[in-house]
Image (cartoon, rainbow, N blue to C red):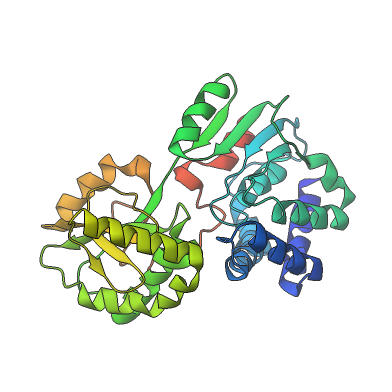
Length: 339
């Protein structure tokens, strides 16, 4: 397939997803039964994001025009180990491999085994040539390079196992937010999306707040209480109850609003249904922390222009990356084109 044919196929795939698919709806129900974290709403959110931002012709052209993608490429096999923390989280990796003209050898996550194969089937129905650009396997072998995403523990295994091949290995990361106390109510409500979407399981979800000394938490807790229906999910509620009991038994100080627990902690990563916060004297003291912990931070949420030295996202936009917002800040397409 030519690059033009590949892009055209992706756009048609996006149009198909926007129009609806009865079989995909059935798979969404099956996926939710297989993994209670993957609710129908969260799966639909992920699919809509892919259709609207990853498979839009204008966005695709804007993205690929920043690279020199040859008309004909020496196709290589790229192993992709997909994560399963949120629905279809590995789609962007396959998309990059496909656009670059390579073949993807995909190891699916047991937590998300149904959606990706169906999207690939739709693409193949649109253009039979797509079948030459991927295979789904139980174990990677015979690959030329690897993109693997997992936890810090699995990343150590990946580093050892894939060390002889060109690779991108992704570890645990989280989003953080820098607040000043001057945020509007609508900003705090939007921040709730960054915290609660996908139950906070995504690497882009905010798990840590930096707040000024003397920060008044009441407006924040009130705004985040608007997301209280999240506790209707049994798995989330179990985590909330467990952490609540743990903090009480350990006699730890914390703040709560019925759907979220806030605790002062310097760690970036927090437990499910909880959020860490850390005080700062002034913004200048925050910047060195962000630099030191850059390998733990996926994205920064803040008022536009608040910390110019760092790339930031607006409130509510953590889970709305564009094609060029690469995970861990590592340019996947440049990696693939450089093989």
